[in-house]
Image (cartoon, rainbow, N blue to C red):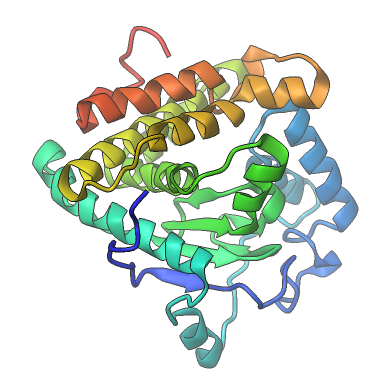
Length: 303
């Protein structure tokens, strides 16, 4: 992928080097919110087996332990200014430039395709752990988007984990991960996340709520494909083999593959992100069309 010429986004907070696990923010137990490290480990194990987003599980555990009240992060002006400095390392520059390219693409095509103006998200780069508007961010959660503070959270060690644990490598595979999370922000801008959250609250079963989550995630995969198509059309940014890198990543992090690796079998009713086949198919749906409207997973005949 030819990303060197992309414009680097100014909407990056680099919190790497500040220390992980929420240290310094006054959290009891040094863990997520009011959770001790033992509770965090249990929650992450449950998440790995069931496929349920650990951020959701941690939120529920905090409520049970009395730590569910959202805490505001206290940051002094010097630290805030340091966070806003442009990353100087290659990984940080890569993330900033991919984010910048998503901004350049979405600010053009979202108004043209949907009539909505695009408001950029902020990407938080961190190591180990940090505080988000949705609670404590932990490296084990993987990248995620928090609609409460409109930010994407990325522990950059996830790229190395993709190589070591999943055998996935290549700069476009990493770009796909970022574009997927930005896709969630696009959903937020379009008002989709709020509507789905309301539907989840009234869902009659956990299975029904999970199915809604899968549709949201597959739509984000599709929107990542829309970004890739439009970016390539304008900047000729893709090299031969880049799309296969993205498909390899989508396949490796499918719920079925993750559950089979963790417990030897998959439980489709517990899927929250979609199977490998679904994730690859919806990415390609967006890439082939380049149109946001092609990503309506809620009206599709099949996921």
